[in-house]
Length: 244
Length: 86
Ligand SMILES: NC(=O)c1ccc[n+]([C@@H]2O[C@H](COP(=O)([O-])OP(=O)(O)OC[C@H]3O[C@@H](n4cnc5c(N)ncnc54)[C@H](OP(=O)(O)O)[C@@H]3O)[C@@H](O)[C@H]2O)c1
Image (tube, rainbow over all chains, first blue to last red; front, side):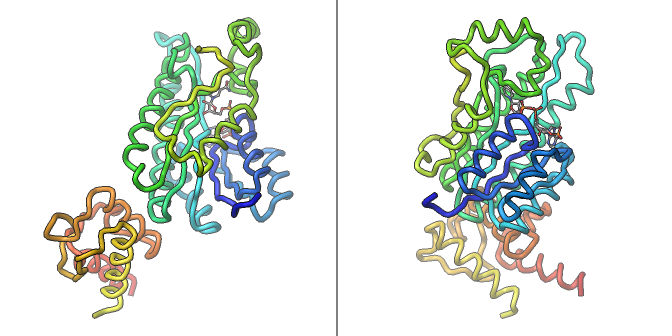
């Protein structure tokens, strides 16, 4: 590492894709703060291994006061944030004609409202400190649609719209905002898909496999690299070619 | 000039400097924040002012729903806070 460590917030870093992104930024020598509703063996291990540059707090970010408390803790420690990765997200599947209101609320409260709330707080910090980058973890289902994922897909399409508008608002202040539309990954979230669906996805994927968290983490690192600050407001598809 | 007046004027001067908007502008208590005849802050500049005030002073009038129009109104917000906590 030639440059000073950056301060990075990654929401939902306790497992799955978020954990892969946390690992990637710990590997690149940065300071990482993360939260999720419960800690895991992995977050405990990081906290022991990197007491000075890994901070974890249990917080449900769909609850605004808890989300605000998390941000306050991070800022009390490290003062400013350079990178925000909005990764925490939830999928509920089911045909829309039978979809429950509770499931709609769960998906929208986390995937959109929590992302709006934490982004507002962090953008304020970035405005006061001269810049930064935000990456929103979106999904190809926001671009193509997938049966059974109407609300989830809408939340991700909404997220991409948020990315574009925010990028325009803050572009002049050295803040970039991008989305990564991820294809299907081998994480707990895709356990909602059955074996047949997963096999069909693999068959239709030019790269011939499901994605790994690291496939996405590398793209995040690329987008937040200061040298790449001419890339903003975009939704970058990383899906092994599935939607090409 | 009170301590609050001096520190807020300095904070706004530094902010204008950073935004390249300091030239030919004098920050006085009755200066208006917006418009050609004032400090000329646009909405994004105002957001930056709001965030910087919060960052340095722990709270800010914009985030609490007030929309101060002049430097003096910002100062008044912090004066009022102090008199409550005093
Ligand atoms: N897996 C895929 O195939 C796929 C494809 C495209 C996009 N994505 C997107 O990638 C992101 C990560 O997905 P994933 O597959 O890694 O999911 P995952 O394995 O279910 O992990 C989700 C993470 O978010 C945390 N989380 C959930 N609800 C939270 C809340 N209310 N507050 C704070 N943290 C919360 C979870 O911890 P707790 O449960 O302890 O809170 C966990 O750390 C999501 O935005 C998802 O939409 C995934």
